[in-house]
Length: 198
Image (cartoon, rainbow, N blue to C red; front, top):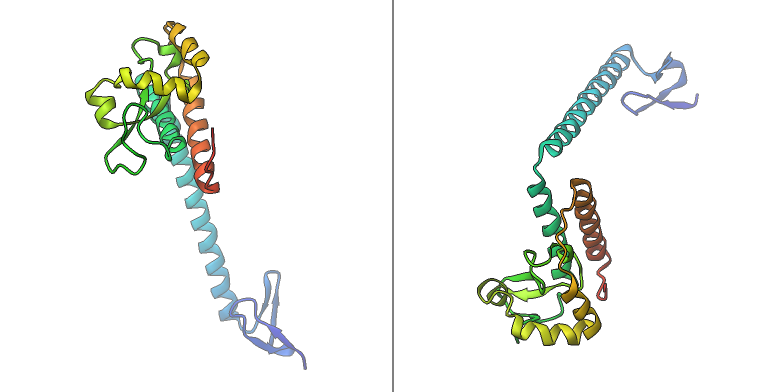
């Protein structure tokens, strides 16, 4: 007589010893009841997990709805800064002679400061990797930054950056999209191990 596999314990038994149910074939009622209980527990757990997931999603939505614009601005700037540091990871400091393997802290330095030109705050021509010494303690070390920037992006682009004096107030939706786009770009670039991402 051919052997059949029990749906519950997965052992093989002769066909004549099996109990047929809509859920499968079992070698005993105890095995069928145990299988039904496990199945019920899995369904209950899945429903509980779904509720938890929905609550987490709702909580995140509520948190983002009440998040102040300044927080969105900081998150967007942080995402752009992280991208710039990764983009320039093989370059030294834009303002001094520190090499790429310098073991200090690296910053994203703005050639046109955010206060002077909020329109170029997120412009990638305006943002470059700099050491913490130049960026924080020497206010960008602009005297050395300018000629190196001209060499890196060209005089036309530097001249264009210099003409940008507008004050721009980015709305929350723009800042959210900007943050998400740069975070995604950075994740993808790191995953692919890109070396040239300009």
